[in-house]
Image (cartoon, rainbow, N blue to C red; front, top):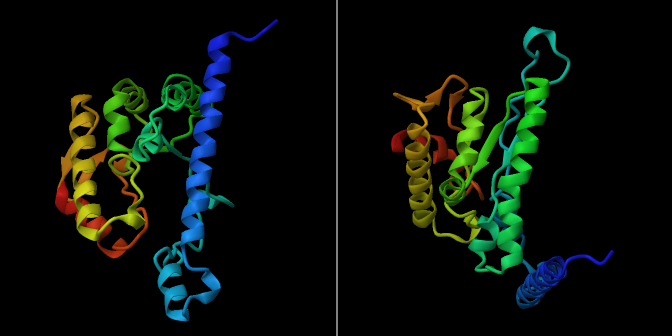
Length: 218
């Protein structure tokens, strides 16, 4: 049985988009100065932009547990493609499939094991897929995390732009989540039964100010 023509077209468009993306990455890498020519100061500057910080592992886990597991999911959908200006029907369809098919499967699996999770959501993705956000918070068990405005590459942004996009993202998510009545406002952040909204800092260029900035914005 031959596959439908639209599937063949979608596969071709997807392959073309991936090839263009890989070609652009290769060209960008060729234009950069080889890393073996870098001074040590540049090596340290580059590496220190992304550091884990001090170890927060407790001496003992609650209730005598031997290990702790944290589950988190990025509800990105179309935003990585939109960020890069890649708007082919195939890529937009892939993004929509994440919300329409992927998310329900994940939520059913979490329901099966009564497991809480954190869903990091770009603001544009939340605006495009409000029903998905509603499905997440309706479980009254999961957290919503800020994940940028349109999945921007923070390492390429000026600090002022990064802060502004984070402010807009927190504002947008707060408005969407309050519509569903799942959150309450407290002095230090946006909270619900599971805790305050966690914030991702991307490239961590101002990681020390990230949480304080999130609290001030709320």
